[in-house]
Length: 269
Image (cartoon, rainbow, N blue to C red; front, side, top):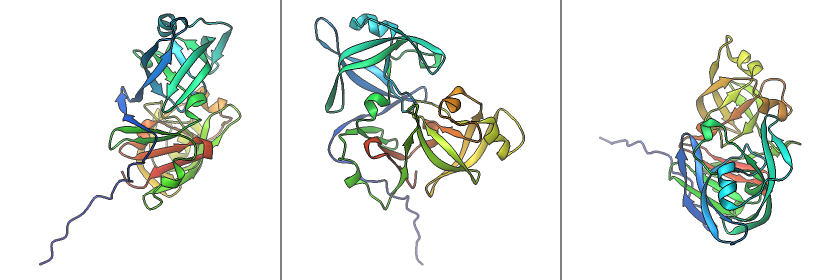
């Protein structure tokens, strides 16, 4: 009598090269260690930042700015609602690359993001290849051109990714069988759907659940919060659209090759 054993699909192989570090999820968001250099003494310090593909600019809290001797200059408004001040960090290291004289924002973080020192945005992340390996709990940071040759096409699907005029990352998805644009925001612990998108899935309500597919990869039945959040307007979306937060990619490997305008998602969790 033959014994049949079901085997879980193999994960994509670990990407070689670059810098590998632990990927820590705290309160539903990815936290990473970033090295900064202060004004005056020039001493390196380590701070905890949220890795946020939904942020177009890197920012630090007021407390962090004071501790590092960073002085805010001209006032600015982030995401149309958050007041802040422009500033410059002499040097910030992420991966093997150091970003010098980096323009940042000094802001008061929203309450749900309290306890962290800053947010690492696309102005830094966009220069690297990123591998977020949620099953193994690791993050790999690679230089441009290092990621694509190592992608295992048998286990990963490539998804073209675009940046809107306002810098938002957007891909095309199927939500409940309906094509919609999707904002990729790995700094958000939850996923959103516009009211128009939610209406396509069922009766009006504060939330919705729907099967989501990205370039042939079935992400499964995902929960959404129905909200016409300002992020959709900033991306230029007035109709059905979604924002995919980190909860959309549980137990998967996600690779972001922003210099090559590509997102890779593992086919199986």
